[in-house]
Structures are given as structure tokens and as C-alpha cells.
Length: 344
Image (tube, rainbow, N blue to C red):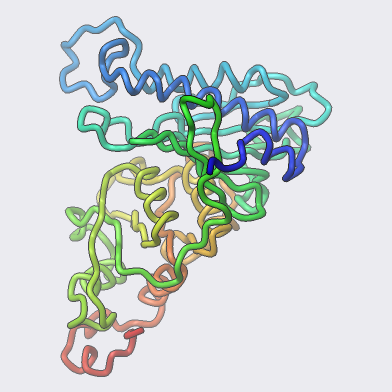
């Protein structure tokens, strides 16, 4: 039986007209973006160009996506729009009596298009700050706890929407025949424990000791302090990994990296980490920067980056414990393993 349509669900859950309208506008844009992605490189140029000498007059898929979301959101009662493609927020209609601010990562993981790996759009809806008249940026520099709604669209075998309005996390799937997003998962709940972790292990030598030791112990499986075998997943697409974790549990790690300039490759706090954290915590999971909660952090810039660990609560808490309670010099000694200090 098909589930409740997104529009009907939004009406039932309440919230302002601006909130409901902005989410429906994002959904319309996502359908258009999905259609273009399905066409591959037939109409739009690839975004990850291998050579600067290649001349291609077509619009890139990431630029098209951002323009599509901006156009749709511009028709809703939204005061300000920000994205990973734009240096500064765009002023839309600050005169609307009850309006919101919308920030998006318009096409996360777009470098995976050529290999047909799921990619997505991450979004957050925030209340307009009292200082917005003087500084539109102020509406986006709020802690994640202030979010009115957050979610992502996953462009894969299905066009899926994971969304929260602060009263649980729900999943909708777009039905091409009905032309609507229909709910497929009601109040998603992450299992507290997991046997899957997602991390780019090729960067292991650049992590701090706590993260290296945590991942090493996952790899040691039943012979290590965790006492059970793990499977590693990594798609290099934040949305794809987040969607898998919401559906079946797991833990995602994008740790700090000691290499110079690597901060620019980490997730962005405002329009990536905060929305994902809101979704995950509304599904009984946790999200931190490895130690500190993501949602309580106050951004100091629109494109500020952060380390990100999220997923099943017991595992995210365990990562924090590795930072605070373990002697990393002796963690792999036979004595440590036999005692099973962190065996759960």
C-alpha cells in the first residue's frame, strides 16, 4: 500500500506556511535534478573535469542543480538562500511576514555520477534571525538545534527523501506514476549497536591516534576489544552513506586530517553536518565531531567545515571514549585485548 503523500504529511505535522512551502519547493527541484541526472552527460557537462583544456559550453550538473533549487525556493516565502556553490547568501524576499532561510548542498558526491553511485542534495530550513535585516548571513550562523527542518534527497535507484521537522525522521520515495513523494518509512530508528562502519581508510595515517585505534579495533573484529566482526562501507557520497545508515544502522566517520589544507574537504557544518545530525538524532542516533555534539556548535562562517561522526548511538559514543579514556600507546597490547575494556 502506498504511504502518505509528502504534502498531506506536512499539513498534518503543522509548522508555518513558509516551512511547508519551502519543503515542497525543494521537492519539486529535486525531481527536476533527478531527471537531469538520469540523462547522464547527454545534456549537461560533467562536473569533475580531468583537463582544463577541455572546452564544453554545456552547463555543469552541479551548477544546474544549484540554479534549480534557487529558482524553486525563490517562489516560496523564503527570505534567504545559501549553498555550497555560492560564496554569500542570496536575498530573496526578506519582507515576508513569516519566512525562513534555506541552505543546501545542492549536489553532494557529484564526482560519482560517471560511476552511477547514488548522490544527493542536503538541505536545512532555519528561522530568520532577528539581525537578518542588517546581515542576511546571521540567519545561517545558528546552532543546529535551531533548525526547523532538515533532510536530504538521494538520487539512486529510487529518488528518496529523508526528512525531519523535529518530531522523528521519515523517509519518502518519489513515485513517477503518482508524481508525488510517498512515505515508505515512519519514524526511522537506528539500532544502538552496529557491525558496519564507513570511512575512507586510505587516509588512516593522517588521523589522530584515537580514530586510528578505533578503526583498527573494528578491523580486528571478534579478536579485538569490540568482540564482533565488522564490515566496512564507503561510497565517497555523504548522502548515500547517510541513507544506508538510516535504513539499517552503521557509523560514519570523516575524521580530522593532519595534512595541510585538508579542512576544505571536510563536511560543511551549516548545510551538511547540521542537517545530517538533525536527521540522525531524530532517529535515535548521535552525531559529533568525534567528541563534541554537532548540533550545539555555533558556526562562525557559512562554509565552515568540521570533522563528522554519526550513526548508531553506542558506536558514536564509543568513538568519543577512544578520544578521552584510552591510553593509545598501549591499546593493542595483549593485556588490553584480554581485559576487553571496551568489549560490548
